[in-house]
Image (tube, rainbow, N blue to C red; front, side):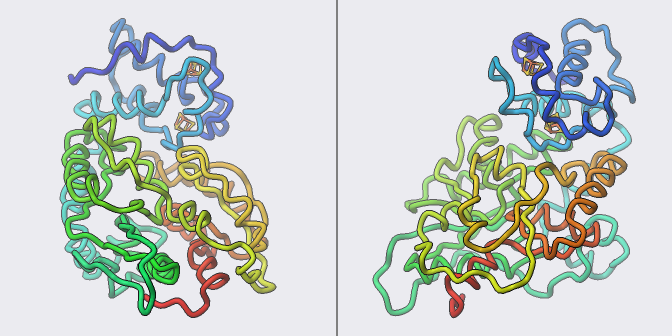
Amino acid sequence: MAEINKKLLDDCAKCGSCKARCPVYDITRNEGFSPRGRIVLLKGIFSGGTVQAGPPAIRRLMSCALCGLCDNTCPVGIKPTEIIYQGRAALRGADRGRLLLRTALRFGLRSPGAALGAARIFPGLAQRVLPGVKTLPRRTLRNGGQVIKPANRKSAGRVAVFAGCSTNYLMPETGESLIGMLLALGYEVILPHGEVCCGSPLRALGLEEEARNFALKNIEVFGKMNVEAVVSPCPTCTLVIREHYRHLTGAAVRNAMDAVEFLSGKLDAGAGRKTASERLVWHEPCHLRHGLGFDPQGLLNLLNIEKGDDGCCGLGLSLTDRGLSQEMLRRKTEAYQGRGRVVTACPGCMLQLRRGGLETVHILELMEEAFFPAAEV
Ligand code: SF4
Ligand code: SF4
């Protein structure tokens, strides 16, 4: 059995402050399904030998949504998600039920384009793996190694885009909005050759070594680029390449930034048109607000987007605990019903919310409409 950083387990004072924010504990009301409960469980397995690494322990460990809501609550500075990632890696051998899923993910993420081709041939399978996707797009964003220059104006600088798998293969229109706005602001945009999956789904399943290999590839491509920022339309990708990579490799893409945050700092608020009369409600991605610490309230006011319901949509559980994932989605669907299109800043949240029958749009597309109605890729 692989080891875990026992100091992290020992540092926990068992105060329970982290429990108050946990959406899974909120549903289950069971200590074993809280961040503190999972830490105590791992301590029992790895320090005392008092707990067996059997199915009940695995169930509790895999029931974490990896939302990170508990990470900013600890008075001694512990980040429970990091302990949970380590626990999943250390106990992956004991989790035999997900062997096939791990194998499929390992191969699928190595070559997402080919996996998508297979999904087109077997639409039934695609619906099971990508439940929020009604039709698979024929085009992708990825163009490999291109530098796109703004037309007829002096360059304002250079940025690179880390598109992420969802934007590259499932929602290229979001990436096109991002690129269109960067060009309209005068930026040269680099879409480098060699971007791979950020590795987040691999790490969620305890495939630490495989996630590390992906991290090293992305750090090689993006880590030393001479650009103002590496921007991404996916806050999970940004969080992973900027923060999680440090735990995996000791290095990271330090200038990674969420695209909405980057653009918010560049746009002239006075130049934006309010979005038309349509009713819109905001779904806050956990990794944007609590992981990256960006609050887009000013932008929401400007675009006439109503504040939505705070909390996790359950996407992070879609591979590891379908029942809890569905319950979290049900709560979101209920909270947003009848409040118009759901606006968010995360392609992953969009997939999950669409699975619940909600109509969604990425805020980058609304920003493009409001600030640059004529912007083109
Ligand atoms: S990451 Fe989210 S689901 Fe997991 S323990 Fe923390 S608050 Fe609970
Ligand atoms: S808040 Fe920190 S110290 Fe308290 S139980 Fe949670 S992880 Fe342990």
